Amino acid sequence: MPVGLSKEELDRIDYLVAARRKIKRGTTLFRNGEKFTSLYAIRTGFFKTCVASEDGRDQVTGFQMAGEVVGLDGIVNDHHTCDAVALEDAEVCVMPFDRIEELSREVNALQHHVHKIMSREIVREHGVMLLLGSMRAEERLATFLLNLVQRLHARGFSQSELILRMTREEIGSFLGLKLETVSRTFSRFVEEGIVEVKQRHVRILNTDALKDIVNPKAGC
Image (cartoon, rainbow, N blue to C red):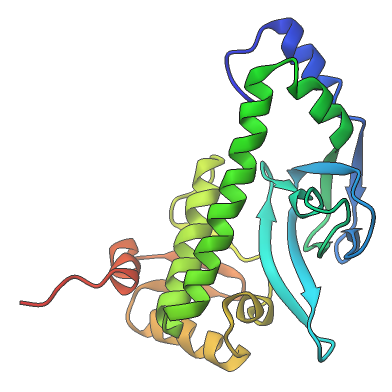
């Protein structure tokens, strides 16, 4: 929520939350084609957004965690353009969009905040396009890990340790890589002492090495 609001404004924003919904692991919060009515603030848990490709496979378009908002895709044409699936048991706050629009007209800070959230999503999507367009496998996985740990750290978690809520296959789908390539790249990072991997638990041992993979320093 935006900072610097009066108690009255905060109370009014609290009124936005119509309900809290618990979503079981593997179930869908909303589906592609469904009518858009609300944004969802994730209280706990992890989600993936995905669309079905022409051959029927799921193409992962993003991963969202506690403290982030899902459902922005529906604003454009009043229908959702992807599925949002819980990767673990989760809870969301349901915020009807008509209420958000109504209150945004009266509380400028809220309107500005909604615009910031939407802008962040545009920047993220642009980043994904760059990722898939020009990077090698090592660069893609390094960028993914750095981004994930940075977002978790912003929410008070460790700067170097994370538990992957998604499978290697889902990571591959998001990064445009085959499952074998994701596994091979993880193994290479382990061999080079960059990360330590125990099943889904990842510990980053050398953040600078990951950053160097993404932005190589110019040679002499």
